[in-house]
Length: 451
Image (cartoon, rainbow, N blue to C red; front, top):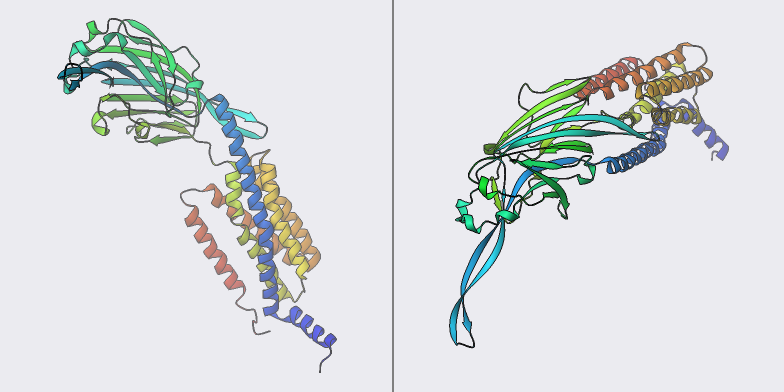
C-alpha cells in the first residue's frame, strides 16, 4: 500500500500540474470571492438607502411634491324631502318636509396657469437634494352659475355661504399670502381641516354672488410655494392651459398628459414647456355634487430628476464584478498554463480581493468627488497594485503588461457601458462577444490533454 506521504505528494503534484485541477481551484476561488463582492453590494445599498432617507428629511422640511387643484367654486344649496308621518295624538298622517343641505362644486370654464420654477441644491453632509420655489400665476373664469341639471331653483341656493376652495398636496410649502380675486372682490384664503391627500384652502364667504350669477365670473390669484421632486396640476378647467419655465436642466415630463408638440425646450440652462388639456381629454364633469372626487390621477407636470447618482452608478458597476474577477483570474490561469509558472491559490485570493477593493474605493471616493474622478482613482490604484503583484509572481514584463492591458480594457469597457442608457445592452453584448472571441483565439493552441 502507498504511504500517506506518497498520496499527499501525488495529490500535490496533480494540483500543480493538472490543468483540470487548476481550473477547479480557480473556479472554487471565484465562487468564494463572490462573498466579499456581495458584502460590497450590500454596502452600496445601505449607503444608497441612507441617502434616500436624508433627501426625504430635507424635502419634508422644505416642502414635498406639489399638486395643485383649483380654484373651485363651492356653492351650498338646500334640497327637500317630503314624507307622511303618522301622528299618534291626532291619529292622522301629516306631511313633513325635511331640509337637506348639499353642496355643488363648480369647476372653471377657462383655467390658465403660468409657473416659474427656480430650483437649487440643498446639502446635508455629503448628500444633496434638489428643491425649488415656484411662482404660480392662475387666472380664468367660472361659467354662469346654474344648477338646472338637478332642477335646483335659484331660491334654494345659499348664495351667502358660497366660497372658493383651492387644494394642494403641500400646504406647508406656501410662502406667500394667498388671496383670490373673484370678479371685483378679493377673498382671503384660510386652511380647512381635511384628511385627504390634497389639503383644502377655503376663502371667506363671497358677497353679492347672486347678482353676478347670470354672467361669467373672472378670477385670478398668485401663489409662491416651496416644493421638491415634482410640480403638477389637475386640469379642472373645461380648457386648461399651463406653461412652465425653470432653470432645472434635467426635467422628466410626468403624469396623465405630455406637453404639446413643439413646446418643449430643454437646454443646459433650464427648460420650458406648455400643456393644453380639454374637457374631452378627461373623464370627469365640470360640476360635482356633495363630494369632490379623487382627481390626482389626472395630474400632469414635471419631475425634477437628479441624473443617475453615484450610488446608482456604483451599483451598476458592481453588477459587473463577477465578470471582472472571473476574466482576470482566467487571464492568470491561461498565463499559468502557457508559461508553466505555478501560481498558488493564496495568490489568486489576493488578486481577487484587490479587484473587490476597487468597488469599496469607488463608492467611498465618489461620495466626496465626481464619479469619473472616483472611477479613475479606484481603477488606477487597483490596476497598479495587481500589475506590481503579478510582476512579482510572473517575473519579467511581458505577462504583467498583458494583465495591465486586459484589466484596463475591462474597466474602460464597463465605464462606457454604465454611461449609456439606450445602447447599454447592445454595447455590452457586443463587448462580451468580442471578449469571448479573444479568449477562444488565445486558448486555441493550449494542450488541454494534460490532466
